[in-house]
Image (cartoon, rainbow, N blue to C red; front, top):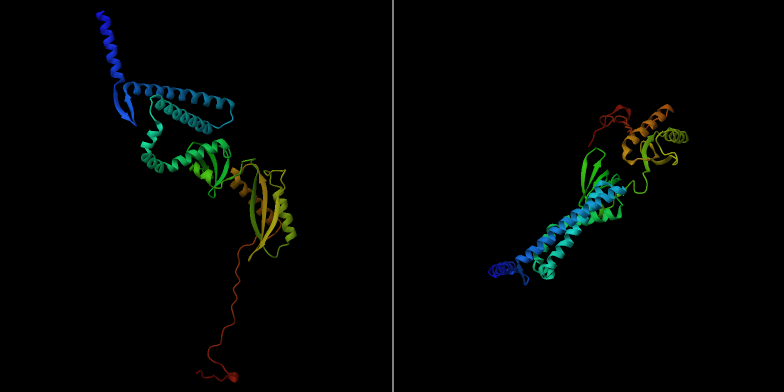
Length: 303
């Protein structure tokens, strides 16, 4: 009996210690048992978030429908959602009034909200981009007047590479809220253009024929799209033409434009057509006689 009484007193003492209020939050007493229950729920949430995120990532990789950057971003979104849900369940299980807690921390939340406004904006934009899939890794874009290729998409930022092999870290808010030209959204076909000016003394019908043949002879152009040669304008020093062909890789636009310009140069030189350059004609008037010369060789007097 004495042993049983001792065990009972020990259990009762531990129970009283665990249930004894330690502090109070929004009218709810927080005890050791409350902290233990919150810790258990949060620990379970972390474990479940890791397991679900790992399984979701494996499923996406197995299907092969998303890039590694997209997979990481989607896994991160899933992990954040599980953490948020687990945290809400933990506080609700402990008996905390979340509404009162949020109301108590409203001022702090507003301050943090202003500080993290751009971060949250980019986060939401990243989720929208991943859901809509209007921009994907490997796409060639024109962002703020610069051609870039998307390398990796994250939840907050997107890593892109320029034509000069420079890496750009672009906030997702820029991609979601500004006008972005996606050259590979539906297909990889891209219209390549170049301009050239010829002298006014040239035979324009012959120029049209030579430019059309030069564009058609380019080996890397798309055969299903016919080249286009148009007369743009009569400028001050030349008659300007535009030659355009279609290619299947917008990322090689600079090298392909160089090849096209060389082909046009050789064609015009071979046809003896002058490529015009800016010219300026200067006319000198006859020299003005010195003095006031009168008829008969008499010199007048100026007043």
